[in-house]
Amino acid sequence: MVEHLYYHDSFLREFDALVISSEPDGDRWRIVLDRTAFYPTSGGQPHDTGSLGDARVLEVAESEGDGITHLTDRALATGPVHGKIDWERRFDHIQQHTGQHLLSAACIELFKAQTVSFHLGREISTIDLAVPSLSQKQIEDAERLTNEIIFEDRQVRIHFGTAEELAAAGVRKQVQREGILRAIEIEGFDRQPCGGTHVARTGQVGLILLRKLEKVKSHWRVEFVCGQRALRAARSDANILVETARLLSCGIPEVAQMTARGLEERQTAHRARQRLTEELAEVQALMLLATERRIGKPGRPGVLTKIFDGADANYMRLLATKIVVEPGVRAFLATRTGHVIFAQSPGLDGDMNALLRDCLAAAGGKGGGSRDFAQGSLPDATRVESVLAQAAQLLEKVP
Image (cartoon, rainbow, N blue to C red; front, side, top):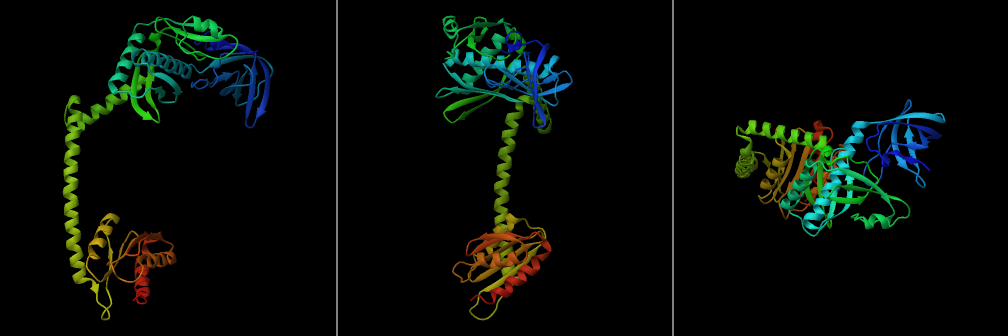
């Protein structure tokens, strides 16, 4: 039976133990001790890291029964060993986990929302709440209550007992397990079974900051950070607001208003630019039809071939559609960057999609589209002229 030291003291940073076994596992080693302060991945909380002697502890996992396996970067001899916990990582997990207990209890007290899952990530943590609806105001009320309990610096106690004994003591969540269980009590606020690491007093959580609320399937997911994470997040947000205010030449309280105004102005400018682009494409299409269209044998469609130096793909597509509004014309357009468009007026024979594919395939390009409009690209943009020339040759065979 392994002695779980973290069950009794979450603040234990160093300990002495005996190495029971040390077995290779790929490029790592599986170490089993008679006692350990290393917390394994469990209950939504990630494992600890640190060292055992001169070996780095890379991962800690639960094993058969009540065992704990330490995965290290090297072998250890059986016998005495000194362990050290990565305290920065441990204390961060302690703050996040206790913060989750407080937030979950607040959600139950305020709007009867049960927590159905908890995830402690590297940057943020989340809880999923089983409740039909949840508003931003409700979650802000839960944040306020949680912080009140943190600031009151209430004592956090550890209790052990059977499931029946813990239920009789008012533990919030019932567990169907045999033997002695562990529960965490936050003075006058919450009791629930938990095997994780926690603060000794709520003030050590520092602060909880809720970051996001979103609907995920049938539950509501709340993203939060505690302690140093909350401080870093608040500092990052403040820096962004200060810089945004500087760029907008306004005070921080006016950032939202100025941003909304800027977005509205941008949308207005975008609509105006679209109108001008449409008009430009119509004018350029008429000019190209007047100057670049080649009229072949009587009864055959005219052909317009043009290579552009600076046009982008979106404008090319718009221009092509404007050109083929004219009856009886085929357009073969390309850019110096390798974008190619084949288009024809509705009602003409021939298949622009098949023609484009044949021409591009010979040059290593890819593309596709419909019978009247197809586009593609070439990996070697210097071959656009040969592609358009080949299209003209193949076009002679099309009625």
